[in-house]
Length: 74
Image (cartoon, rainbow, N blue to C red; front, side, top):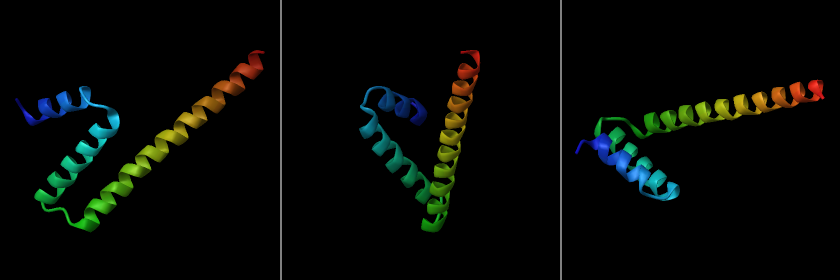
């Protein structure tokens, strides 16, 4: 089975907290194995958090717009 197939199997058959820990550890090991420095991994993590933050902001803006539209409709 391919690595991707194994990862999919793990993620589907495990509670999300444990799966998240395994995914993080696996990604960290892969980054280190491929020569990423600690600083590069921290920078990557910061970018990942920024994508998440932007997604949350977009969701909040969408909800606010939906609520405003609903208030106009009555």
